Length: 403
Image 1: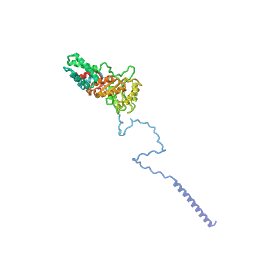
Image 2: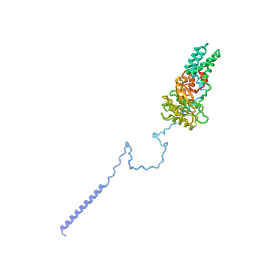
Image 3: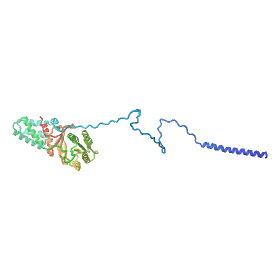
Image 4: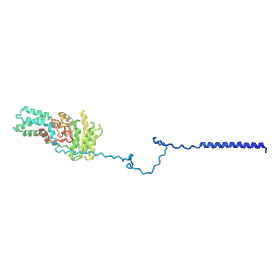
């Protein structure tokens, strides 16, 4: 073979080898570039940064099968024990004093306010000569004490007749004479029992009515104490929904003696509250349900509608056993005007005279009984919780004329 052809063959082989090596080198470099770089080393945790929020799609941590510890087994920071919750002591229930003889106990308070009436009458009757002027003075004292015109004339006529027959008059005879005539005027044969125990059913239902400001709600609370003191269980119905805080006031009275109070929303329907009170009283098996009613006198028609509705709704359960009218003794003859209005609205069965210790006009007892034809059954003689007493004619008259 000639030398030139050999050289060409060698050169061609070298070129082919170089090309093949170039191609293989490019493939190796490309494959190295496609390989992922190793992850950087983890950074130190930032203890001030908040924990990362989980993202959508993150898997929840596999729950660990470890027993759950109770709150008592977990120590609070600092190793302190869990706080001990102290139970509040129950409301202490008061035990009202017995009502028997309560008016006798309050006699001194009554006699202080009524002393002028008894002393004035005894002084005039002790005069040696009782002329017409003296009898007119006696009439003036009685009228000033709000006895009323007709009862005053009746009392004076009776005294004149007895004095004429008696002749000589010692102080003891005059006191006995005046006591007898006053007792006749006040009335001793009338049943003054607050009817709360009907024979055929329970509970007895008592509705308390009266103008706001006479002590109506307070009297209802004090009456609950009187009943509890006599061994009866009581439910109170706060049907005076129009006067702010009336229900709170009544509930406070009830809690003091352990009586349950039924109430409704402020400004709600009084008849609905009264209905619920009687219903709950029957379910609880209590002896008496006392219903405190609204006492607004803006218009007689509105008052008549409200009280009439309360009465009708309550009597769907049972008839009312007692409707007590609360009067402020210090209002005198104005109280009689209020009494007439309420007597036209509902059938009053008894009267409660409050603040009798704050007036010298004890004759209102006689006047209001004559006006309404119903007896005074309870009298209020102070601000104390147990200063409401059953009315006893003998104790009352004895307080009027003194010892």
